[in-house]
Every structure is written in C-alpha cells, then in structure tokens.
Length: 114
Image (cartoon, rainbow, N blue to C red):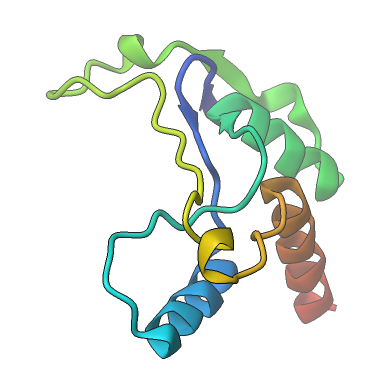
C-alpha cells in the first residue's frame, strides 16, 4: 500500500458532509461553502497511518512515497486543504475533526462486520 507523504488535504467523512449539506439546504442561503471536517488536515501518509492504527492493522506494509513520483498526467497541488469559514458565521457548529470522524467510521465499520 502506497501513501503520499508530501500532499496535504482535509479528509472529510461522507456522512458529516451529507449532514452539513442538508443543513445548508434547509437554510437556503446564497453563497459558496467549503465543507470539510475540522483539524489542520493531513498528508495521505498521516491519514493512512491513523486509519491503520485505529483499525489495529500493521503499518509495516505502508510504502511512503512522494507524489511527484507517480507520473500523473496533470500536476496536483501539494496543499489542497480546505477550511469551513462561513459555517459558524451562519450559525452552524464546526464539523468534528477528521481524526474523530475517521475513528467513528472505523468503529462503525467494525461493528457492522461483527
């Protein structure tokens, strides 16, 4: 399994995104909103290591690489982190951290398989 060490993003849990999109739709306000879980963001490596740790899986098979070695046909930004700037201004609570969202997802998935 490969994980990119030098590209940053803001992991966002689909469930949290869906809940927020519904809240925004109910408010029916104009504008453009960035919706992402909280926190400072993570590299693909950081996210992968956190997921493996939470799932109690061995990270020894994780191969850390630089994104530029992938030979993608189009350049990608090294930093594509997003932050919800308007949610609180319109009365919505901040989304939980991506780490808490990841922990919830993994525990939910494990419970479903038990």
